[in-house]
Length: 102
Image (cartoon, rainbow, N blue to C red; front, side):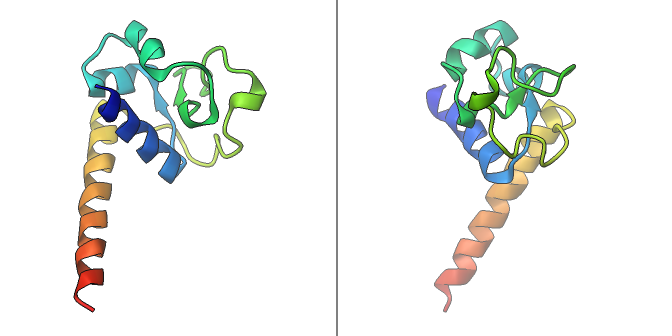
């Protein structure tokens, strides 16, 4: 589970996108209340997971929120998160394979 949460956090951070607690929990197939334990203490890398009403991470001091937190809208839902992650993975694999042909 830890590597899957890290994959989501890496994706969100790389793309400067926010996703709600509910959608990340659904993607990971864990109860939303368990997500806080998986995320650990507040830090920049986990601040991309946000409250659906406020668009901010719950209980985070401003100093622990990524400076680019509002660079993009919040990912629409769990399916959108899955689609975006799959698309990025395919695109990165394609770009890597093109680079090898040189």
